[in-house]
Image: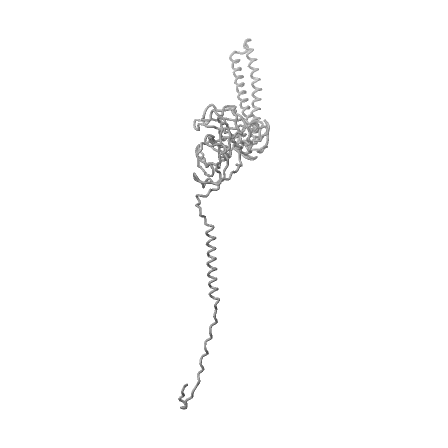
Length: 415
């Protein structure tokens, strides 16, 4: 109810009341859903925890056997050898060039690899001036020879008239002296002619022996002086293998000793005998020089290259053979792991020597058939438990010489 002042008339107004609120619908299933979700989450968490717990290692790592690879030590026979580096040299070698004249090279008739015979012309020089001088000396010598012959006849005729009194003895002696002087001049001219002929012959360079051309130093047109080399030659019919050994190995390389020669350039392996040995050592290096002659009729061995020599030292002795990678070598001792049952034990064994991919150890310390760890030993300690897998080594001892083998501890296996 409200009252208005405009006309003094009271007017009663009716105000509508607000509608009553609707009752909310009841949801009796909502707590069930929430409870089921909570139970699902808890179940999933329990399953994840159980799965994570199942993968957790409850055993200490040190207590588990370590996987390793082992090989069985093999009985073998070891014979120590010495290895030396040698050089292959030709039986004969020569550098051919002028020795008396200086001239331009006119022709060079050979190149490296050419086979030549004794006396074949290798090169020529432009010696026209020397040829002309030689001819002039020859003509002068011929003239002196004629004049000396006439003088000798005249001296003999005058001397025959001395007894008859037609000529004095003084005149005869004077004529004989003149004849002898001309004879001396003739001899001097002949010596000059011989020297001139040597210079002319020096202009034609010939092969001093049967062989092959190794190098060519000059081409036509070059100017050469005495002592310069135009070509070089070698004779490979017999190759000399030269080497030096320490004085302590003097007794290992007597003449006739068998030596295994490996030519590194071709890979060829051959047996040779010591042909000669120096009776004394070099005072500076304290080494003894020796040589081996190898017949090479097919000329297959390149000279100036390197060879490896193997010489037996001592008698064969029984030993145990292992791959090199199965042991750590230091000095004359080898450190390795052997497997007894399922336990790895670290031992040290005296080394006899090495050959190829094998090491030979003392038979008195390591027995044949002993299991030796090859792979996995870097992670082992003495007394560790292991799970061993036996393998057969890919190499057999002494089949080939290793370039990295120690010279004082090398050897070969004998079946």
